[in-house]
Every structure is written in C-alpha cells, then in structure tokens.
Length: 445
Ligand code: 2IT
Image (cartoon, rainbow, N blue to C red; front, top):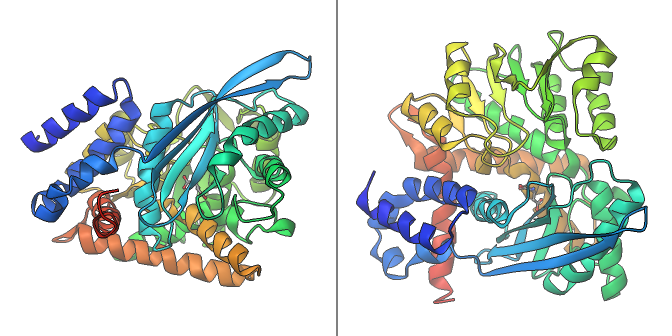
C-alpha cells in the first residue's frame, strides 16, 4: 500500500469510527484515483478528495408510527446529501433492518460517482430507514411512509434532492411517499422518481437497472468477441433488479439458472423463463423475503443457507446486496470456468473479491458502472417531468442503451492498459474527474 493512501484512510477512520462499509467504498475509489490525484496539484491544493468524503449534509430523524395493533413503533430515518456539484442530490431510499448511517454513507458516496458516469445532471445522495416491510400489512407500510415523509419533505424538492427506490422501496412505497409530499406541499412535482406510469413515472424505470446491466454486459462481452446468446448466468436476489436482468437475458438468448434470497438459492437447470419470471414478482410482493417457495412451485432444487456462486456458469451477476460475493466465492467461480462477473448490486463484492479479480486480470465490472441504468432512467424521468411530457418506451430504452454504451466507453478510456480493461479503475477515475472539475469550478463550497 501507498503511504499517502494509508494516511488518508487513517484520517477518515478517525473521523468516522466504525463506519466499515463507508471506509470500504472510499478505499476502493481512493486507490483507483490516487495517481490522478497525486499528479494534479489543483485537486490536491483544493483538498478535493478530503471534501468528497464529507457529505454536504446528513439528516437523521425520528419516525414514529403505530402498527395494526395500535402499538407505537419508532424507526430512524436518514437522508445523506452527499454531493451536489453536478445537480440536485439524487439517489434511492432503502428500507431494511440492516440500514445504518455507514451503509447509507457508502451508498451515497458511490451514488455520486455513478451519477457522474451517467452523463446526466445529478448529484449524489441516499437515504432510508431501518424499517422492514417483512411481515407488515399494507396499511402499516403506508403509515410508516407517511410518517417518514412528514419529516423528509422539508429537506427535498425537484431542484434540491430527488429520492427514489432501493431495497425495500418499490412502486407501492413511492406512491405513499409521493402522496404525503404532495399533500403537505400542495405541489405536484417530480420530487421522487420511480412513480407509477399514470402519474408521472417513466416507462422502463422498473426494468432499467436490470436492462442497463445486461446492456453493459453486452459491451463487456463484445470486447471479448462474445455475446449473451448461449451463455449460462447465475443471478442472486429475486427483487426488481434480478427480475429486469433475467427478462433481458432471456430476450437475448441467454439462460439464468439461479435466484436467491436470505434463505438460500434455487437452481433451475432449464432456465428461469416465462411464468417463472413473473412468479418472482409475486414472491417479492408477499413481503416474506424468501425464495424457497419457487423450488416447491416449479419442482427444482433449493439449497438452504447457500449462495448461488457454487453453481457452474459462464457469467455471474450479483443482484442482491452489498458484500454478497467474497474472495472464496470469487475463487470458486473462476475455478468453475466463469468468464465474467458484473456487479449489479451496489458494492456486491467484498474488497477481497474485487482485488482477487483484478489481480488475476479477470473481467470484472463494479456496480457504479453496471447498475447505473436505474438512476439514469430516474434522470430521464426527471427530464420528462420537467417537460410535463412522456417519452415512449422505445425512446427511453434507446437513451438507456446510449448511456450504458457511454459508461462503457468511459471505463475503457480510463481503465484500459494493454489488453486488460480494469473496469474498477475506469469507472472510478471517469466518475471522479467530472465531479472534481465541477467542484473546482464552483469554488470552496
Ligand atoms: O442504487 C441506485 O442507483 C438506486 N437505488 C436508484 C437511485 C435512483 O435515484 O433512481
């Protein structure tokens, strides 16, 4: 390791004790951009990196609500407004019991570079709560969302901060949140993205993260003289992102043999197609957060408490959550002949796994490039809301395609050395430079 990076990280850790996920996300970026930073006295003098790791504003608040039994429950709400150099803060809300400030800071930090890569005018932010929908009724979810927005509304706005969904926040939650915002402000604006199609949402937004990821994988494969057709994929998770990716892989003639949940993974050698893909949506809507019922429904194998990285595949797509694929999994995948891993979840791979891939010159791309299609179509939803007009799905899909191609070009431009493309370096440097230049131009703010 490099002494400059060491001392930078020591300083960060002293100021943010215990925020391990945040430290992990920062270290990955700092290692990638250090040469660029070192070689650029303008950045160093303005302490650009030191400023970037400090959120512009962090809001934490109480969310009191009452459950169906009439009991009072209290959750914690957050919004981390990380960086507004390129546009209004933009990024999802995560509702999950595992949510902490460290998790939202890592996500908001990543989001800043991801949004920069999309080429659209969006800053970075993230928020959420330790509330979990598991076992909750629809009415409880609505009351929670209303209470959450009753505080959040004063901090956001279509030109200030535009939240969206993430884990645990889908169309239903966005509806309740939007309704409460509109009621308090008496304004119908594009303050949230991921809205319903009839009331300001964009076509292709639900599919965008998964579709965009597969478009990105297409470009990666093209570099290797390969295509999606005929390839076998493992996918983790079974939510909206996995669903979108699986739909697009099927359309392009690939085959997906796994999905997973916190309870284990299912292996379906015939491929997850047709009604089985729709069944994933049903599973998600049941609020149980388990994937085992798929195995019973379609008579396939279920591996309890295991991860899908044991399966022999050509391509692996982590689509669930952070740190779901570690160094041991990375080694197993490579030993089993896997040719490519693309992170669709945010920071889906541990640092050990990422280093293992890059050190072995294995083709690996990080979440902030691969999954940027989701927030990109959120950006297109903002554009449509501003115009008070809706594009067709062909129009949105075409723009999504172009954006993913652009991100791939940026990764190649900054990450190619010899015949290896280091997508981690490419994405981090590409995302960083644009934010750094904007911060410099805007002075000491
Ligand atoms: O991680 C992500 O990029 C998202 N959850 C989507 C954020 C957004 O604003 O659409």
